[in-house]
Length: 250
Image 1 (spheres, rainbow, N blue to C red):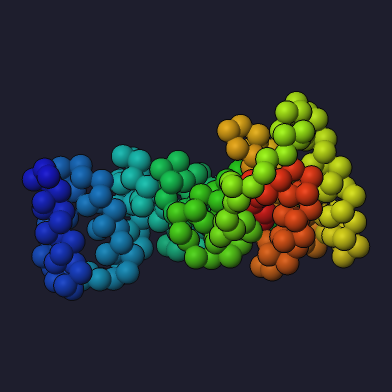
Image 2 (image 1 turned 90 degrees about the horizontal axis):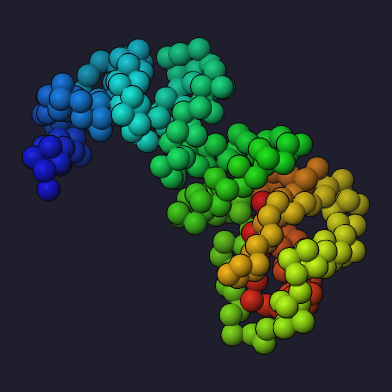
């Protein structure tokens, strides 16, 4: 462990013990040597008013300094500030920019919050795909709310089942056509009746079959949407293919 890491550890230990003055002095010293995590931690202290007078402008300045070194936490907190107008003018473009910078390093909360923003409007499928990927990463990383939003994360795959050789030896296009047909005949009519719909965002058949689906219309954004029809979809597609399939739905 480097001397910088040891010092950061000491500062963090002091911070957790609420010895904010010690933490503040150590992080200010490290920040003077371009330690981006120290800059970010100072930003958090000023954002929360811990051991210092709460100062949103100073917090913003420290987060900007940390972001210059692509610190994921600094980027995430900048995104929150711009999203919620905390000490700055609301700017959703900047919020999206900094959320994306944080998700590039797989920041769990950034993945979740960016997903929420991108999945509000489901008319642009490219945006929906990006939001889906973020929500899935957050869910697989253990974010509790993301796990309730993303259907299929907690569903086991039966890799011991008898494989449907007839289906699996077909071409990708033929497999996709059968999946689309099953959704069109058995799933979409039920959803359309209630003003909703569903679309295939991605279908993978290598090395294992994985299907990513998104609800549209009235079904979109419903907290129960990922679970209420999940079993019907899984059962239907298991009959078309077999039980060794992974299905994610949001």
